[in-house]
Image 1 (cartoon, rainbow, N blue to C red):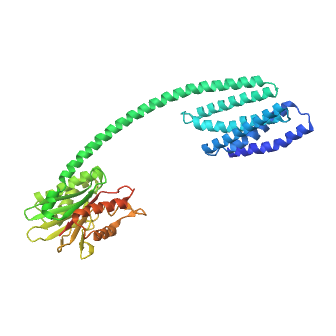
Image 2: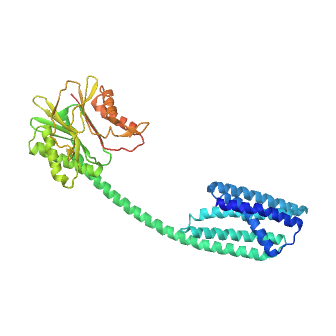
Image 3: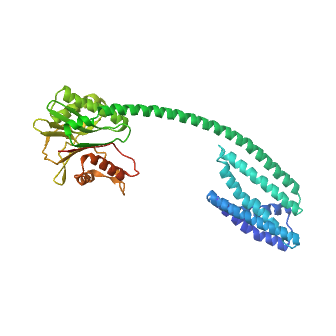
Length: 448
């Protein structure tokens, strides 16, 4: 459109001197050639500035169109004053005003109306056609008025043509608008119906997942169970979705108390299914198979996961920590897969040894190692999954990291455990800010 505007502007610049020469020198030219020459010159001169503004935003084009309309009003008012006072050049002013209105303002109005009407029509071509008819009808009507004032021929024909085109355009647009209203109403009704169906389905799914959450929570360790084996503890449990792949589970035998803090593959519904399966295999190893050592329990769980889930090369399973508290000799042993326990003692937060392999199918399949924890009164033991450390946030949107989590554990050493859960949660939400939670979060803290 810019190229067309520049071409028309060049044509107008070349035509104007020729036109002035013919008028001043009164050169005798055949009207069959002169009239088309004048029409091309006028169209080029008055439409090229409007075409240059086509690339501008709608708001700016409207502002320019309004300024041109004000200019037209001033020129026509001046022409009327000149006619009343019988001063010369009134006709020239009137011609200039009408041409500016029809070809400069009218061209911009054509573009603006097209931009407006295409929002109400499914066809851009139809919107352009209505805009063009409106432009032509208005142009013919005002040119007819100009011809009438100047006593030029064909004035009545131009005014009739303009009125007919405007009337046909208005009637056609009215009919088209009614059709579009009916179409949009039907479309909105269909969308509303689909929305209601989707909302109903979403409610059914949400209700099902919420019920699954109750089932999952019934299998997690209850505070009363934890209180028997741990005395002083806290649990921070922040699922990413309604249900979670992270779980904390405990069971008791005549001579020992077991606590597992694990991160199943995935989160949400898939993670929750995996957590139920993982809990069942841990429970099977301890209560049915009577396996006592944490490392052997994890070996059994891994074997069960591989034999039941890995037929299609699936690597589903879990990372986690299983701690055994022996009742008679107060010995504490554990086995860990990828997630390392952290002990805070004498102002130092230290990660304990861990096997770098999952409880499930992985590159490494060696037996899990058994580790013993030597603690003294006042020491803190933290069992965590990776959700807190992997959360993005802060000023730069980076991960919290294990180092940041250990530093936070040190800062909260003197805080009572029943208050630490809230402090960890506040720090997590502060770090996360407006970002989405990336994974389930689970921390269990124990003070000896």
